[in-house]
Amino acid sequence: MEQLELIFRRRSIRRYTAAMPDKHTIKLLLKAGMAAPSANNIRPWHFYVLRNRERINALREFHPHASMTAQSPLVVVICGDLQRQPHPGYIVQDCSAATQNILLAATALGLGGVWLGLYPREARMEGISKLLNLPEHMMPVSMVALGFPDENKPPHDEWYPAQVHEEGF
Ligand SMILES: Cc1cc2nc3c(=O)[nH]c(=O)nc-3n(C[C@H](O)[C@H](O)[C@H](O)COP(=O)(O)O)c2cc1C
Image (cartoon, protein in one colour):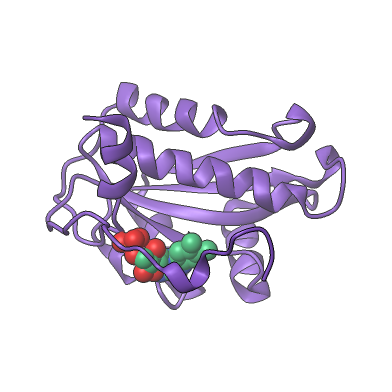
């Protein structure tokens, strides 16, 4: 796949087959997350890999827009270690960059995924922290539901000129 085509072909995929991606594929997804740019190169992210059906089903008890996890065989939760944050706010950006890399890698590997927001929704952050028994300093930022796609979506081809500015407003 052409590099730029990969960016445009990434879409939120919310229907999956039952097949579980193999260990090698899951490692590649996480390596892609770890290849993301990181403020001060601190790389504060931690990735929690969920394959247990009961645990995945429990996500929907506190996340109102995660109905696709009833099908997704795999969920990766992306958290940041608050003890390794050079300046407040960078953790969210580091974890978001990692999240996007995972989604792009999933597309490249023939998987489909969708970003599920956790931060800054306090009830969701509290819910996932309890479910995974996260330590106090581990801040949940996002989740990605993943699996082999059972739907097709067209690639992006949008252009928003009103949101492009030369030099200043
Ligand atoms: C921060 C963030 C939070 C999101 N949260 C959810 C979510 O909770 N549930 C969901 O189905 N999609 C969620 N999405 C996916 C967006 O709905 C999706 O990216 C958007 O509709 C554009 O579609 P596309 O990803 O196919 O380009 C989220 C995306 C981002 C960036």
